[in-house]
Image 1 (cartoon, one colour):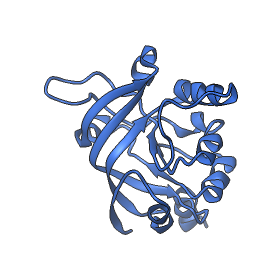
Image 2 (cartoon, helix red, strand yellow; image 1 turned 180 degrees about the horizontal axis):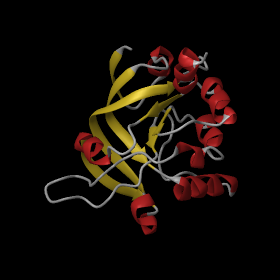
Image 3 (tube, one colour; image 1 turned 90 degrees about the vertical axis):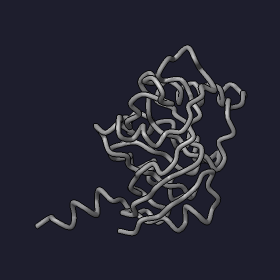
Length: 183
């Protein structure tokens, strides 16, 4: 597995080069959003409104961080199960979302949308929220503050450790791993 350092926001060239299994250290801006925020995103779009952030080229981290400890930008910031966002994800990918961070498998519809719209899905280590939070430089709520930890926040991260799970060629690290050991 190749180690890559990448910076957000992403252009086409970045996601095209990433392959399932690559280890990544991600730096730049990522936005947190979980299922309640995703539902609002899609409801707003269906009502003819606009999103509270420019989504093109961005990365969304499926995370609901805990309150910050003294002297820290954020509390624990571990990934949540990505499948809960699957019903909303193709819509956001069609608008130019280029990356998602979470844990767990994605639906077939999301994997197809990742290929169609040239995006990437990263896996973060579940259960390591305190460790992952050390990569967060700043945290600012940008929308839906009333959702508490599920509000949309702008994070600046430095060297957030991730794995590429699904790439633009349709590869899936979870499937690659299980097929390797299947008898």
